[in-house]
Figure (spheres, rainbow, N blue to C red):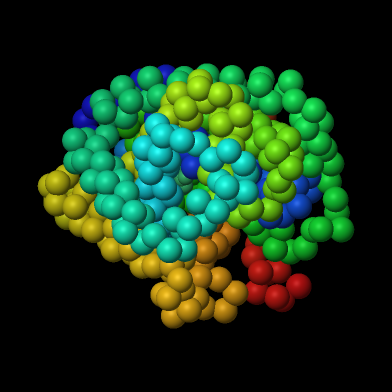
Length: 445
Ligand code: PFF
């Protein structure tokens, strides 16, 4: 159990460091591109407001009251059936599965930091060819950088979460935001900006199907770091008497703003350079380098800074993805931090190797199951199924199982008359909404 405590601002930074990551800048633009733009963005934003906030606050509350790993938090806070409820705490295991592909993408970004020092691709087509050749033929480069990501992330976790993360976030979050804002203002001066706004905010309902809903909702969970105990684990170290509501608000506000700014910027560059938004996971690596090239000599410097900041955003999120399971083994089995971090690290590292191979020509066929290869399955199953299912567990647990008086004692002074609205949304809107979407997934509706 960590004895050190997060101050409120320290917690917001750590939680925002967890939420703001590859999900905002790598994933959001490309899933938006693949799902036709406006309608997808609208469903995602509605999920964030109607469901994300309720569950974020519920997770922060559970961590704050539970004070330990997720399994212990469920066990401790359940008035009865403790033995059964503790299984809901194993949602943290999802993190190791997410980490397998997340670490690979952090690795790609490390690679782009390095290549940004030399000649940038002069056209989007050239950028696409070079990304695709890395993805589909160059297993060694990917394994090298995935290994580097694994070492880096595990090292930070071994050193203990609190201080390292707080210091790292303090420098890197503002750096990332500054670069992103700079790029955004640059994008607003381009003709294609209007087209990007139209693509992102003008819903084309004919493109919507149940898959769009599931992906948008899954993405809302993924980007807010909900449904696997990351936020819960951080809030276990939150100082007494902190405002949980303000913390939840700030994390969500920062995360959503950054995603929208990143999306508008990337799509503007793509349209400006005659490319299209449905590029898949390579989008950020394809749209940006060509834009950096067009800036001339300064482009290299901005590229290096941008990819470095993005790498660190990915690393701070990675730490929060692995930490819940590490905390679990420390709390429940009295493992040393070193042992727990190495064991969890090895798991995601090895699964990550297979994820890399599933994109490589020659291995792809054996590692493709139905419509997706392993890499895409890991992403889809974790984000679209496991995180929302765990979100339902949290909402039912806090909404129906936990003692209401205990919840009121903490949150009523902070929420005032909005308390009942939050409680209602947690009990009914979140689980019913998510349940209907889950049903459509299995084809029942
Ligand atoms: N929210 C992170 C991102 O957007 O990149 C990813 C993430 C972190 C997912 C922590 C889940 C989690 F528990």
